[in-house]
Length: 172
Image (cartoon, one colour):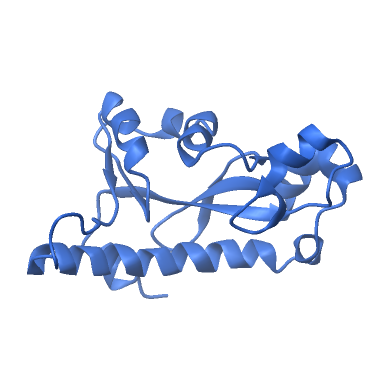
């Protein structure tokens, strides 16, 4: 399978990360409902992070957490940083809040830039953003390969949550 163009120019990239949410049945306990309610999905969910290699192969899976966890907290708790080596590059669609954590271990974060005080990007930034956006599609396809399993097509039964990470790791 040919390697996507965005990767051929990002040879120093060790892993591309993305987060996703899985719907669960609504818990009976009010506190658990609040911890798992996703305003983004408008339902109760669990959140996980996957890492893929440049070929699109899933190489890392985090445990699933209550959706109330931030992407930064999820990144840190996943212990992905323990697997990185100095000068590794992590690509993410968003994640500027993890940049400082990666710098502490001599790694870099590569993610798209966002317009702040300017009307448009210069040519170099625009091209770089397009390459990273193309990578986002690869992450979305990897996540969709997980979600096609029948177990994840419907909300995960509340009674299964005690062993959901085992199920998640075995499916992937």
